[in-house]
Image (tube, rainbow over all chains, first blue to last red; front, side, top):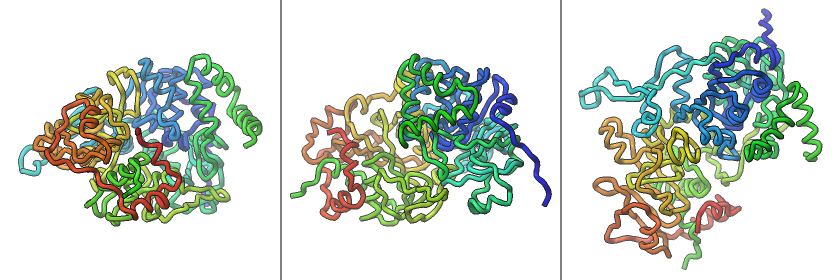
Length: 297
Length: 262
């Protein structure tokens, strides 16, 4: 068997590869399997002026609250059990970020177009709604083929490609070469994020030998190829407080504490000091373990 | 004499929205909507396909608050019968293909069925950010849509929505017959009434009022002129079998009672 490359990195090394002003895609979905240890590393850095592309959850909320976001491109921003992300709401209502608020399917098409290296994909989604009115950057395209009645071709929205400088995703298992495995019910759009990006950094619960993937799940679960990944980061608990089944569920009590931190700048400062202004991810995981012990859970 | 309560009448009114759909993805979102969809499949519309609220099409009857996914010894285990795996990336191909009838909610709706749950105020800097456009634009232009609105009042039923997320009939008509050929807003079920758009210009019409609710009450709760036909029927009562299914099988914890304004 040939040896595969060794792409192992730390969170801080990943952040060292990122630059202010970049467009960064984030995998997962709402408060599900988000690469939170990488988000926390960004929050420890000086990165700013970012454009974030995401089926958003606390990733967008945290980055907005920390003032690192220039523009958010999203299909929604939700915490699942808390339908509206409070920090994101604040950012929108105070006008502190630019927004490209897409139909969820359009976002998929933008990532798909970038992954295929084509400029746009035509879609009916968005026609007749206020989407193209409030976002005039969404252009129309006419089909070059005749319409149903033989007349002019159908007008559709040309969903532009959303190429990413970098993508951050989290999988349950990975090998050192950057092959990834998801063990839950849904890959979400992680493969599209990976292919839409110049560089993809994949955190995982555990790095295992390639030949051990089959012990964890069927080959159908091996959906991220090392062709798509630049770096792999072993991050046990790395998706906390979002869910990462079957390894762990969402930490609902922590999520509630996080959501409550949007109530005032003072409460946010406290939350930030306690959970984010830490030296390392290891410190965070230790603090979370202590919290869990304290709560007796 | 039926002892059905208003939430149960609404569940049945929701179920009736899916009558005749046959083999189609019945995708109600929200507690009463979900209970109604499941009731339709358990009774008069057995060919409907339904999700478990996550990534599977399931033939199991799952109460609204039950998550059938469990982790057992680090393995993913499903406590349900899976008909097909339909993860999120696959939902969009399904809806673009059109074999779906979604029932959504909304913060505002107007007389042509334009719906808003994106935000209140100017979209560029909203007074209140809500869900965003989510799937509403793509859903409404690609397949049948209905709405469950648990709190019928003039702030929800408005002359003009702040942002059009779900496309109504006037907007669809302006696109021309080709682009709008898959558009259908079938019904709006509220805590007071059932509404539809079966009028010459597709303006919203009162289809039936729930038992005990007067037409005046409904008109007063609507912030635009509602088309009132001459003969109005009452929303039908649940049958005994429907009541049994709602209370004992689909929603044994009475979650429906928390999803309606009385």
